[in-house]
Length: 330
Ligand code: SF4
Image (cartoon, rainbow, N blue to C red):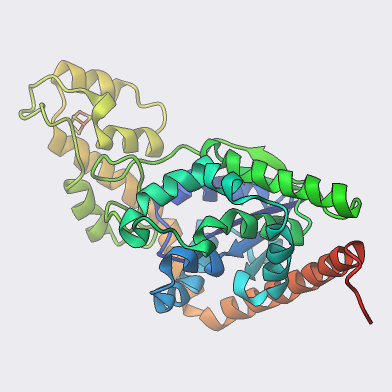
């Protein structure tokens, strides 16, 4: 029996190179070793996009296409649409009794995200958003996931899941699988504007589906060292977004930094070189995406079958949960 891994994406936009380097590449490697469930987390997306359900709906299959484009093989994974597994919502309710409001408010990831979403929530964050780590714990445990790929910033989330599972098992008896973190390298990719995070909402992302013309225009606008105005000026690659992307797309090209510092490399040339490299790297990904997009009904069948398989697993888990809680009445 292979161990099961749960991973996934929020369908709030197409996936970009930040997702590719941050999680998709790793996910593609893991699919051979683990029974991989990929959750398309539409319910979670609605916690902060409740006013835009059409946007969430539109991106459910876009995100599946991005995964397939990145190298996920249909026969190796199980795609699951979160809202089609009501057992997750049920388990969320049972878990809700096992965590205090103050514990949720102290979760560092939630705290950071609430601060980022001040515009949406003002000073009164919704019950659903505050509680999404509970729902996330239900996502993981309802499918008996053994492992969850996490980056450093997601460790508090996983710890909250582990606390809930331990507490449930202590009160009701050993019922649920205690998940472990699968720590990989999840570098946070900077946005084109140099901001700490690449994101669709910040309008600073290069998407996997972008055309060569779009990539070229975006790299042209990327933030460089603002003090390097002429080719011969000495630059500071460590503060340059273009250099960060060079390191991602062509690891090991250390001489580039030396040329920049020595004033023997111009930003225009540097950007053209990067543009060519990004276009070359993304070309096969874009081609695969287009091929899958032309067979969208097959992709939908794939997701439908995956969701049905996942539902069977979730239903068995909920039966065990209700048995343990002595709330099976008939
Ligand atoms: S030469 Fe390249 S690395 Fe140096 S500042 Fe310009 S774009 Fe950045």
